[in-house]
Length: 211
Image 1 (tube, rainbow, N blue to C red):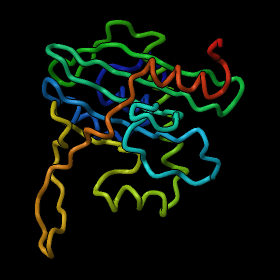
Image 2 (cartoon, one colour):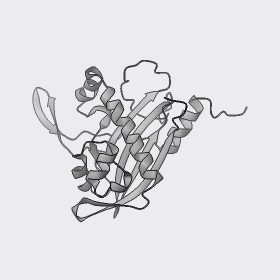
Image 3 (cartoon, one colour):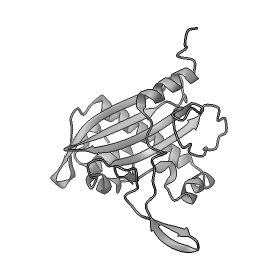
Image 4 (tube, rainbow, N blue to C red):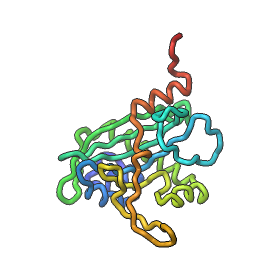
């Protein structure tokens, strides 16, 4: 699919290789909402082929070890949507880090209009595709870590309000009874993009502090 073919939110999700039903949730977002298309943070020292348990914070925000980051999300502001994509994993020498963002508007019928349908949209879609590939590579055991905590693998499709509470209720067993609850993600929000890039650069030795 070519970028020039993106006419609707449905097309946008298809171009990003994300689940097509996401388009309905994105169109229904309210001001202050965040929709996560994918988020995976991995400590620099992690050398296993398996996926690690999601850390509570990313990129040393809590003073812990630096993390490599793969994240894509959308925020709803008044009259406009903002999209963000970050990729700092050192997978291939020719694969550059990505820090991209842009804006779009949605009109009747799900028609989408980007402020600049160019590099930002292409880079965002690239991060989404990397995340989609990571999802496809996850084992059932890796996914169970998320399901056990009442979430989606890589937080793919998590829709949050302005207080970081999930918009959709979850059925959770509490004291032997099933209760409907809203999961709070305030400790798992997307990483500040510049912080993620700088932390990865330090971790790989691309940046060094002089004595």
